[in-house]
Image (cartoon, rainbow, N blue to C red; front, side, top):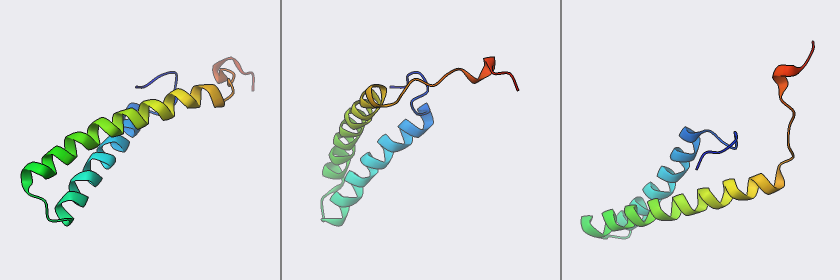
Length: 74
């Protein structure tokens, strides 16, 4: 998922986990059993990975290339 500085890996993992936990909490609030809540969590993980991949992939097309700041003279 991580590539060329388009978001750190912990940020991407956190985004995926937020989506998965959202599915779990919504299913619990709707009165689902523990089995369905866990299924919603697994489904949320899959959806979160797909959304994160899609966003990172599209950022590569939209964001301009930035110069390397290590070669800059101050």
